[in-house]
Amino acid sequence: MKPYSSLALILLFLHLGLFCSIGQVIRVASAYYGSPNGSSVDVTRRVQQFADYGEPFRVGKETLRVDPSPKHRKALVVIYEVSGRRISDTVLEGDVFYFRNAEETHQDWHKPVLRIRKALYGTRGRSVDVTNRVRALAQGRQSFTVSARTIGVDPAPGQKKWLRISYLHGSSSRTQQYEDGDRVRLR
Image 1 (cartoon, rainbow, N blue to C red):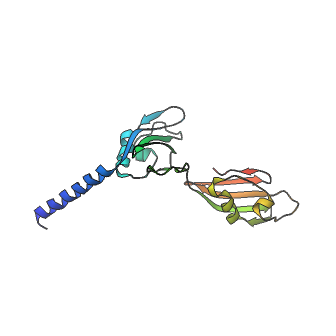
Image 2 (cartoon, helix red, strand yellow):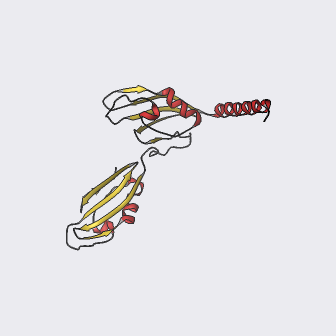
Image 3 (cartoon, rainbow, N blue to C red):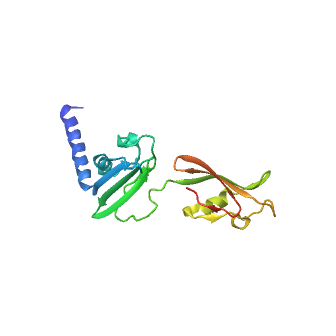
């Protein structure tokens, strides 16, 4: 390849990059990363770098290049404008931050994904797999009460039963156990 054609390609890519960044409408007004104990740092410039490309990113010290409160759970609070609309979002450390466009108003946008891996309902030695039923009940993060009627099956009539749910919350693996009558709220 001749030197002048390489230069032409470089100029073309620079021109395309400039053109694409001009079309970007996300402006970060402020971004703070910190813990509830009050230790936080301004990460507005770093978050604006992701906004320039509309890129989602995982909130953490590696991505934001700072750890204002080691050994404490932190959150990122970002206020930004998209097409003249002001949006405020808070995302916990370890979760993914997504920039929304002006039309997106979904309230649970940044909640970690909740996936039911396994659910068993019954007594010691007599339980049934109710994974699909619990997935349906937990859809949309609705809470429900543990009972044979709610679950749709009674593996041990007349006996007190429990519901054991193993699930992923974001990247965390969790297991919860509830007794009949308990209210299930997966978090």
